[in-house]
Length: 322
Length: 250
Image (cartoon, rainbow over all chains, first blue to last red; front, side, top):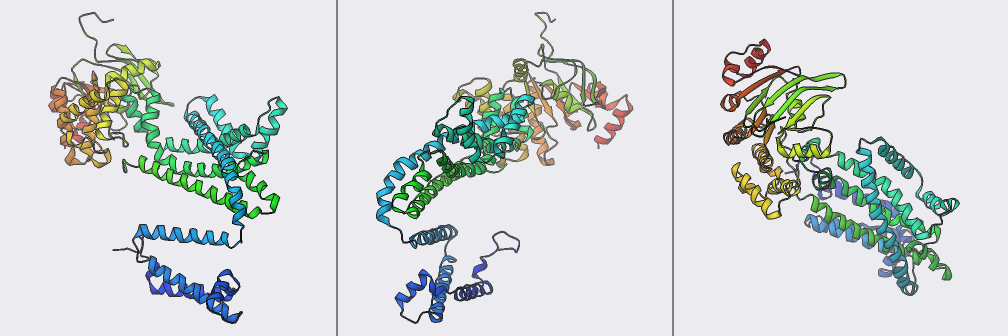
């Protein structure tokens, strides 16, 4: 039984009043925009020889519309989980098809991908992993400082989040790499990247951790204190484990975002994934090959983080709702 | 201070005053609770009764006066505060069980952290006290899966398992559905019969009659009247007490 205001209110697409107008709209717009000129148009032309121009546009539009219609028809008859996976897979296939349409040289990719992974990916992962750990520590300290009753700690924490959330990450990288030598400290490129990413993401995550800790009712602190627990135990055994439910989803976002922002470190010449992707293609003018390859590697790593986040979320959700 | 023979009073409060900003919420309170005594504190909302018992285990600070628990005077020193809290168990209106831990872990974790018991010892002792509040079979559930009455019984077991010298109850039945009040009060009566020193803030006058050695009536941050339940309920002297009792005894 579905009610109109349920969020799962029925598969709209199964209703003819939605399904057919939708297909009509797809057909008309494809025809209108000259679908015959596309890669799919060429495919249709290969299957059925016909005159180019309007007939091909019509045929292509009809072909795609039928494909979409059939697809919806099939997907709507599956169980929810299968629907999700199938749609995900189809969209992924479309993206790959889009890349494929660039007419890439796979021989070139094959020659370069080894180096892209052993040098670029490894450096990217190394920088990100170290930064994630340091940023988490900074965030925890920042959040505790902001929630403390110590004015100095609060002042430092407020200034820290304000500055490092306020400056562009690129600027922070330059300031550490080019600015610190003015004070007599020369910092190498990789430590620069790690420092900038840690400080910047630590500042964002400070706010996430603070909100997470503040989401725990006062009674939890009181109960733990009343039992005689030491402050460190109260935090690590009672408050933080409960805050995780609030902290994990946005933190997962931050980690994925950091993984890709580590590409900014390429400006100071670190041989990470983005830097290699830009430089390796130059010799043979095959930029797009390297860009697509690097993009897919970034995406795959993000998917791994996504799955990891999901696992951790499930773990901290096991106590159900309160 | 105290001689070797006579043990110190369980709780000794003298000249206690507390302000929230400019508003004084406790006025020069003197109160002594003997070991084994069962004290019930009642009074209208805002009278300072919760604040009073929350100062005893340092959940609330205070500006003037002295609080001694088992002869130890509360100071700002964290070690002293923790020492006092380990001698004082507390049960809250909102239960305050730890929702991310099972019932058993709720009782066992504090034993391991605070009493330094091994995992096995803590589990055994936790199960013993869960049996005493009649819910050993719920040990592996999470608090959210229990009824309010069951949760409050777990909260009592968690506090008593620490084997405190004094138990404080801050309106333990006020957040419960009416049909669950009795199961919680029964556990508290059992505890009283075992000789536990108790200070109970409650509106359950039946419980006060049955269990209390002394009933205190607070209003406006002051102790207005006190006495054994027989005289307190039958012949209250102060008119504010009379007015209050008239309202709650129906």
